Image 1: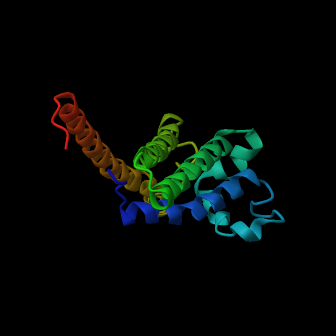
Image 2 (image 1 turned 45 degrees about the vertical axis):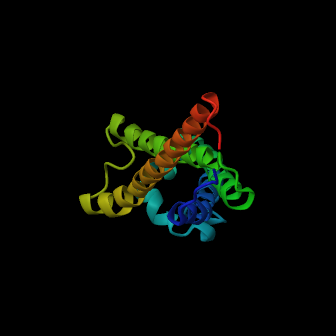
Image 3 (image 1 turned 90 degrees about the vertical axis):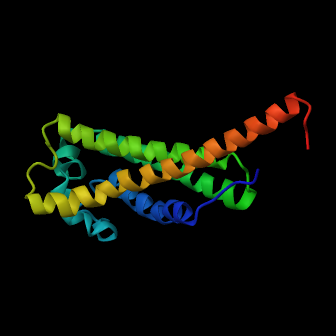
Length: 181
């Protein structure tokens, strides 16, 4: 059975790779990437974001909070998996590529839910200082995309995996009963 691809999933994996790379660069290069740092010009929009989400800002850096870079390291792994899916599905055309894409989406969703749960369990320690408007427009909506889209990817690729497994099961049953065609 040929690998089944979906343009919207492939586009998400492709278009998010540079976004994630940019974010990882900001996190790993702190404090040089932060406002006042010599490399801040590359990450100028983070001047605002480091004030919205203090995990990205000075308080977390100064306290030695490792969560930011730990989630960035997972972003690297997740992005490599996304790119592996694209290569395996579109170039190699390897049917099990769907499993790689599914696993990458599960990783994205899990990591993002962990990020949100960490905020909840620390009493909104990094974002609770924002106005409701800023919280919704600058944190919930942008970060919510990393929950919504991977969930839909998991649903779609999960359906594709079930379809492949059912196909293989039917073929196997036919072979076992001697009804091969």
